Image (cartoon, rainbow, N blue to C red; front, side, top):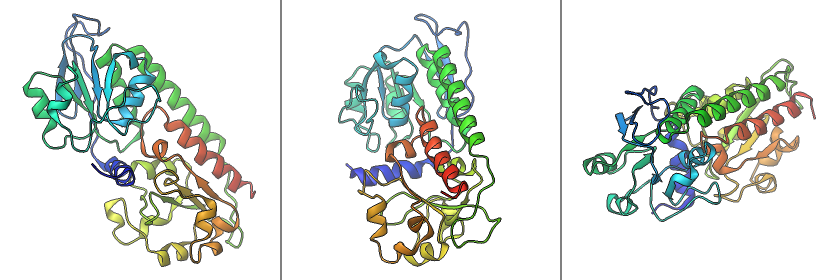
Length: 318
């Protein structure tokens, strides 16, 4: 079993994987009620769910959040060990990183939802005729919305899924629009330059580039990512050197390692040389919830709001 810190880092890095396709239906499947099969086009192909599932197993923290957000929580009988939200989710020792087919089958699921096909788990479950939806990590916002739609149709919660997607879209658009003011340079920086940022995945200085899903979220605000020109940045998740980061001198520092690694503004300020960084001097070190910042589900607008608030504050020169 991976450590919590390793699991979070692996989960975030998985955001570079390919996402699922559009959702389609077969026959009279508009409602997804019992007796009316629904076919969902997932990453593992066209998956037919014979009837509205009543015993769902989720091996993805993001999809666990979505299932509960669309009102399918009562249909969920088991979730993986890292599905920490909502608090009422039936968390078990099931692992999404090392899935055990026998353990999953023991819950008698009529639908299994996961974001990674590790150790041939999809084939193993399909072989015993358990419907499996592989909804992998996304690369774009529209893909995140598409996966929510998939889960809505698979669980008979189409209307709830649509309401959730519409609400997420509206919230994110509103936050971005509110922060769309001309950014002012941080202290000591020339006028007219974009605000720069550093997103920290762990205290070993792993970060994300603009090509990742997380990077694209920041891109909504026109921020410039200091990790983009780092060594091995092409992989999307480079490990920055202390020297590189100090030289880059970001205007904003976002910490997505507050839970896994106990990082905060005070801890960052104690790092060698970091007390001279613009973000530290101007008190622009922003703590994030590790889970929210690494998932692409219903709480994504909360992550966007934190970024928006930081951008507005920096733009105002506060």
